[in-house]
Length: 162
Image 1 (cartoon, one colour):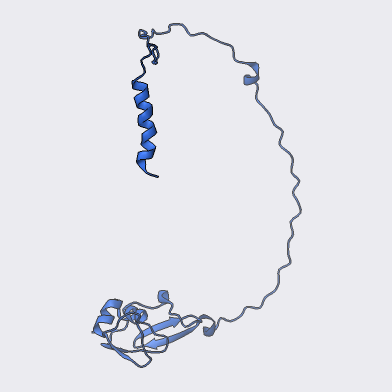
Image 2: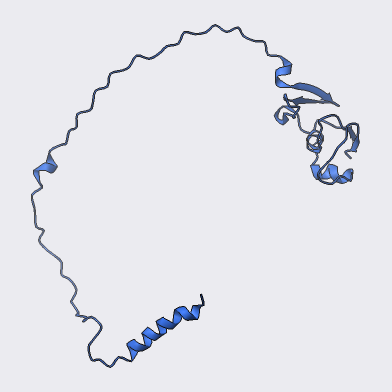
């Protein structure tokens, strides 16, 4: 809806209010009162007796329920095998730890441990892993090897790192 249609009734109301020739006053009368004086006496009132007595609500008493204590089950400790956590792979002088899905566990890999000038891509290797191992950024490796996103690597591909 146009603004002019909304403003039209407002202007009509303002014009009729201004053109009214009535002598009645539409404003409230204003009376001036002097500054209030200080009250010198304070009226005292007694406090109700209900406010001076403490309210006491008795707390319900709770009976502790007997707790269930299951009998401990004797479990034989299972030896932790390397296969349950994935596998370790030596790449150059780096120990690459992978989980069960062959995803690198970066917290267990030393960053920048690969120091050779080239890298041969292995199965499940990514540009991100190679950058982490070499201590370089992904963009540096991509520019050295003319790679563009998405970074498609092939097993056996040799990447330059310097």
